[in-house]
Amino acid sequence: MKIQGKNYLVSVIIVNYNNAPFLDESIKSILNQTYKNIEIIVVDDISTDDSIKKLNKYKNKVIIIKNKKKTAHGSYNQINSYYNGYARSKGKFLFFLDSDDFFKSNKINYLMDKFNKNNFDLIFDLPIIKYKKKIIKNKFKQKKFIFSSWPRFSPQSCISLRRDCAKEIFKNLRIKKFESIWFDFRIALYYFLKNKEITVINKHLTYYRQLDNSASKKYKLFSRNWWHRRAQAHKIVDYFSIKLNKSKKINLDKFITSLVVFFFNE
Image 1 (cartoon, rainbow, N blue to C red):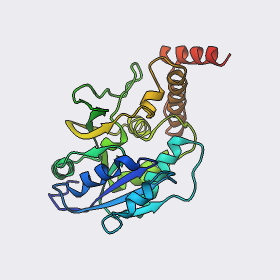
Image 2: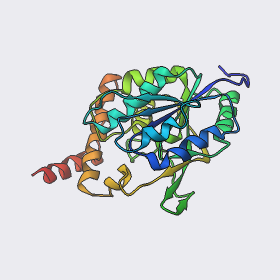
Image 3: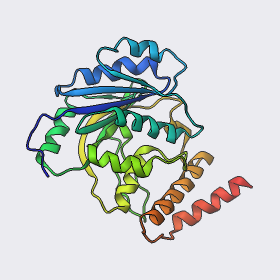
């Protein structure tokens, strides 16, 4: 059902862990949006830097949630933080943002116009990759989830969705297994196996910061970590295939990945 151009409340959920140097830029990018009916929720995942001190400057403008405990599973901590923000939020639409990333000033207005005019459940926009002083705008290309090729999706800071979709997503994806598989991949996989459409807007609206200690640097192509994460990706495909009563598919990629990981573990 289309939403007929209404000025619905949007909840922007920012998840933070030890990103104090980038919090100002992240929060200000939301405060300066051309779309104004927004609530900002920042979930801090037990940071040990100056994050809370930074956040307290905005306590009259943002809702601050401090997580009480965390696990050894990085991806679960991330998903659980987004869930905690969702549980506190009131918006009809949710926008996710990692605290080292930030939005273009027209992002929410542009995407709410798309939600208004179409029956979209979930939207991925495209990232502008920022590494140190370099800006890489057109390098990222979205690849659909097809079993014969490896998918590639925008990071979670590029995800926006309707509230009723978020309820289903968190119910099914908030699990502690598969610690190397992050929120964006889980959502894309779940929608693919449910035969639901993911709308990709071919517009670069999100600045995605690559840090030297970021997850993307940890998984260099064909490294040990890269192969282990690829094996976990195949396992989560099998997990959700069973959960959703989909037949599991055997493919060459899965066989080769299992073989390489076996030799790494020897």
